Image (cartoon, rainbow, N blue to C red; front, side, top):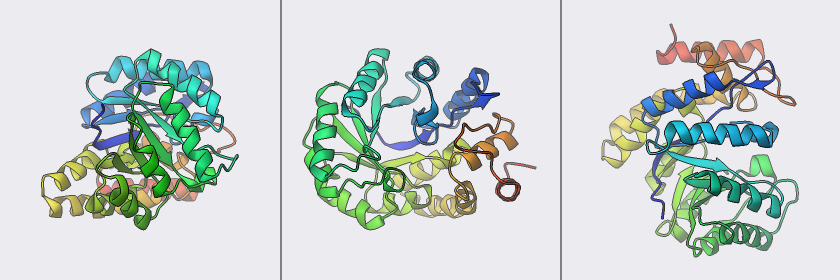
Length: 293
């Protein structure tokens, strides 16, 4: 079963004039691989998964597997708010050769904790893929509690959770209850180092779109016992991380990648381009960091 750890990138989906920009996508894959990312997760929140068509999903995942297979783990984002639909998408990812699936808590429906348990259990039982649960209550309107995660950790292929509640208390409780049975990943860049300190195994990162090498180095430094180096990178990244969440992600991070010449800044409606003020802030922080002249 999967032994996931390190820096995984929640990859943006590059668009241009409304269509998938495959050249930019391959450029982004190469940028991540050169930067030492341990995993790539396309078509999730940062990848604007809700507005990626089924055909685009197949194409993006296929390109990711062709480019990164054997060099970095490729996890398919397969979660929806429909259990049957999530199972079908997860089985599709398995057939295509994905290394695992990132499965978000069902949004809008607002299931109970028992409903969440039964949903994830049904998905896990329908596939041989290792599953990373995804808790992001600010997006979904529901939070999976650590006690429910501990129940799910008893299922053999539920191996990790991306915890993006923004609560260090919740992350601590997750590690305490089931950290010996599943890998806890930070889902908030600004909390990665604190979460590593309480037992997380890595991060599913937005800022790694822009800074894959430094994000991977920070996690590696922590596990190598070079805590001062990890802290230095964390503190250096922090103002840029804040800038990347000034508006709804992935608008600001696509703006940053555009400024670095890696892809267009296009987002799909109902998201819109970032404001001039946000663009200036992102540009200033990229300059302060030293990655933009």
